Length: 114
Image (cartoon, rainbow, N blue to C red):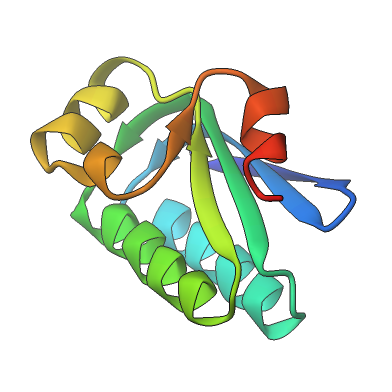
């Protein structure tokens, strides 16, 4: 399944629910364009719900890391919610979960922004 993204707002936090494959091409382009637009619109607190993300590749990981760095420079942040399966394994292998905050509970993730 190609990447699908739905967007929710909670106060000053934008939650992107990702579903499917975030791989080079359509998936990475879609994720990148959503994140760039949020940053341009001044939405600096972003929570990526990746519970239903089934695959991620280096291009999408690069997009996530770039957004993490950009949002941190804007006094905001990017955090991950519920990494699962092979996506979690990739994030652990690359030690990205040591750098990008990750949560299992959405309420705790939201509270961590304040």
